[in-house]
Image (cartoon, rainbow, N blue to C red; front, side, top):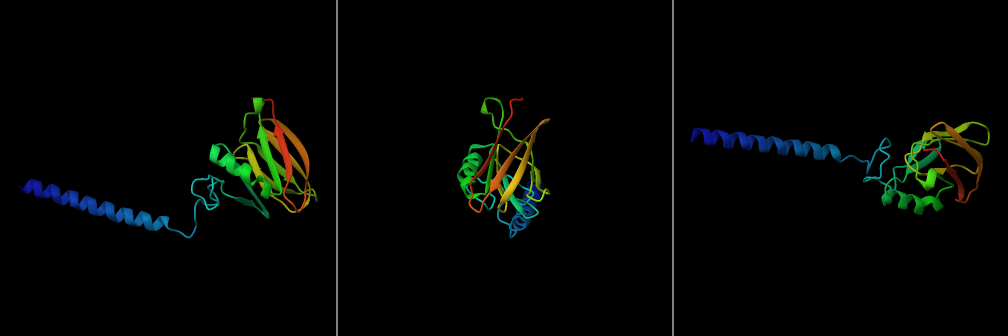
Length: 163
């Protein structure tokens, strides 16, 4: 009988401890930030909603990249008409590519964005002007000149025939 009551006491203490731990975790998870952080570029539960990856910032430039999953690719394709510049990265037989290094040079010759895409789509908010986009996949770089106006619609598609 003593053994049984000790086990019940231990089980009750463990349940109580787990309850407190759950309460602490719940309080830590309720910050003012909705969804991911700026270091979390996934679409899982971020504040953009609808499968959109987290918006990133480099200086005055905002951008979003991704599209590996169907939710993200659908959301990015749907949103590309709202962004000044939309880019797409494909490989042989129209395979989607990720990890493409993108460098955008502004009208004054200075870099305005230097980052790696997290998927085949990248949307960028830039002020109007003429830009040079350098995209490097593996060791092969391609360059496109784009003119961004006050209306969304500039596009730059990059295709590599390398594996």
